[in-house]
Figure 1 (cartoon, rainbow, N blue to C red):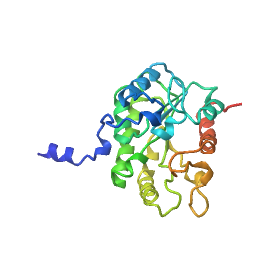
Figure 2: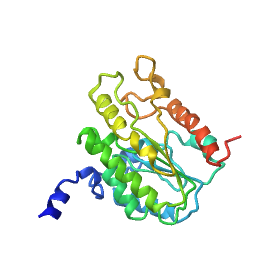
Figure 3: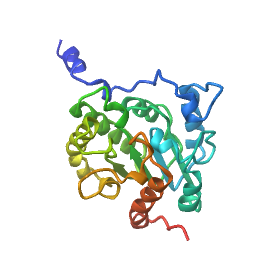
Length: 244
């Protein structure tokens, strides 16, 4: 009974499951390439390690593109400019929540990758479905899995990007609660939290409009440039040379 109670207490955000959602068009596969095939592509990319720089996330990460990714990649040129001199890979899948990324990590997304630095951004797709505590616990589960499967890597964890144009947007408020709840993760060895919000919002906490697309969720090309610029000093500190 105690075991069953413990299982019941685990929120869905922390239980690794493959996604049942396929956003093929958003991912650039007009013929309907399924989610599991996208995951398998990521496993193949991991096996080509070691990698210098390795991104894990959802559609915001997927838009970087990266080697071997047959996806719509609006930020591909920024990727080449900022990270093209490194062995770098992007394993984002559109629509992924914490539990889906957790499943990918537990099923080969880091096997053989041996990355020097891993950048993680996940959780925004949980916002419509889960409460802040559940999402924070899901992010923590992802962090623990990353640290376990990549024992030599340094991890840069991004809190959830500010969602919605104004600070009173419900998704923004929930995201802020999640971000407050994961601050303690920085006590983990090999992990640094890199908060992008100060670079993506104004003094009144409204979004910097030109950094976001019209949905106030996904990034525009200038947003990817800002993201890369924000990462640069951290990557240098971790031994990765900057783009020339």
